[in-house]
Image (cartoon, rainbow, N blue to C red; front, side):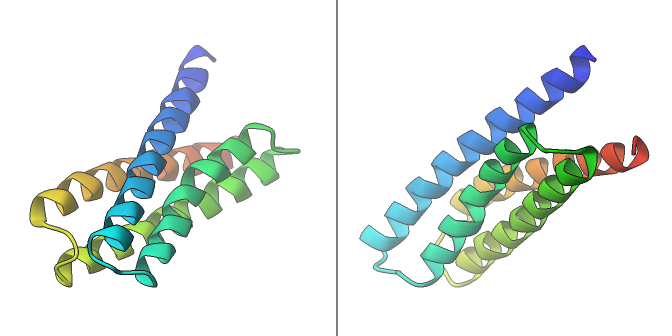
Length: 122
């Protein structure tokens, strides 16, 4: 039981740290690059990941938990798309992209594992 609790805290902490980076990315894109449309997309999806994980903490049922975590996974995947697009359109440097991409891929792996485990324990 302790590992599950620790795993959820790791996911919660990592998603919160990632959301902070996404807010900083949004500020950079809007203030420095003067990009206002796509940056709002990554802001929305990137901060949704952690918000949904927080919602799942107090899910009403196992199915509700799986649903929230699954939606968080979808948002993480969308965020990965925006990060790749920003690199390929030169809004992000290769180093900036690499760092963010690594972080979102790690979150995706943890979320996939969490959803898979929760479904097996239904």
